[in-house]
Image (cartoon, one colour):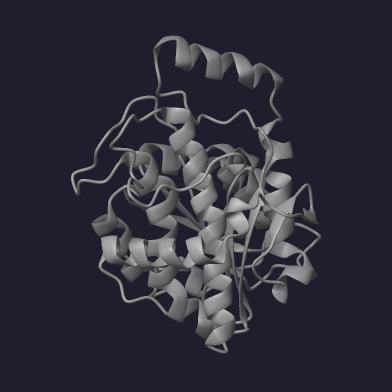
Length: 301
């Protein structure tokens, strides 16, 4: 991203302008729930940074957003979010924005087979969890000076029924795609809760951190898988929520007034809900925080 057009936000044509002047960064925003969320927020006047991996998809997403939200102020940036180095570089670029009012960590993936990134990380763990950690902490100073600001993490009800094995966080023993995905969503909730606690302890109450379940939505997630597993995923999506329905909870947590002061919550269908007992384990949250920062080479808050 050579320059930031968001520095000079224009006026769009929608009647509801409650987000005018706000800048929202959304990962995984070149399609699926992320793009539907971005379009809805752009209609309300927000300036958007769509984070994706492929420029062709990014160009198409920007074209659609500007078509469906005339006058929208938006740009795209690109990174492989499974790469810690690329996420750090992305954070360095985005920290040059005049302000960030919301960081919406939405990108995610599901992989049937164990894949390892160039940095030696299991891909589900790297993309679904580590990217949230690295991008959030890389932008924390920008969010703080922009306050009040929000960090919104997309988790899932799929977290229920699993725990983290700190002796094997990355599934080196007996990897299976669906359990790995479920554990990554548990990690999202634990990270959110620990982040919220640390923000409060540091007196950074102008920045809140919350997470949510979008529902079972017909996104592209899992489409990269072949065989019976891939067929099963595509069949299940016949009964899933639409993208527009799936975006509603992300929009709610991003914009509802109560989440400017509430922090550490897990939200399902617009309501704060208790996650699983494993997701309420504060000792596990602290342990995951320490392990994640060690992997990423970060010092944290």
